Image (cartoon, rainbow, N blue to C red; front, side, top):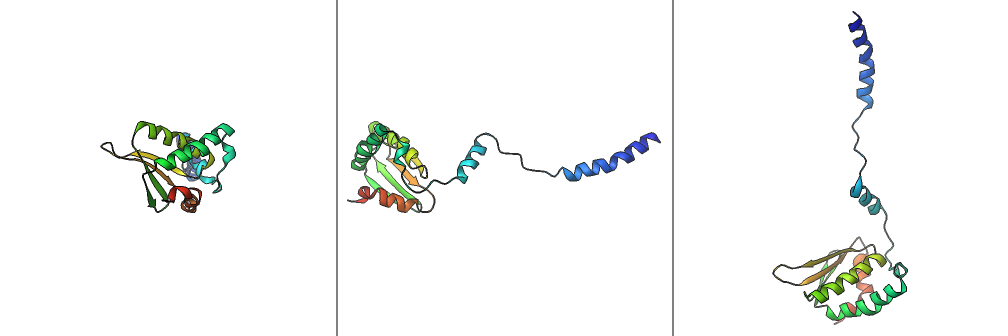
Length: 147
């Protein structure tokens, strides 16, 4: 009889626990949590030159930019940006990679991809992003689009 009373007394408590313990999604951890936090913030569509030191600015804008402009072999228009083709040699890759490292600091709203085509194919720099980025690229890189 005591066992029966104990079980009967526990049923309402267990029922309350079952109802109040609705399944919830676990809080994101690690990179997923950081990506969610970052994706909510959107930088203005403007180059923040002050994100680079004076030496970095000089290198990025006065040296690397003109060098890459002169190395650009072709430009492909994409729905959300552009792809720029460069020679697939090691020296060009190092220049493009150095430029990307600075560009991601001053223009954090870009999605930036570097890729080599297979079989020793071309080196491509892809700049894309949210709405307005394509127009920003077209205006900011105007010299690159002149033939």
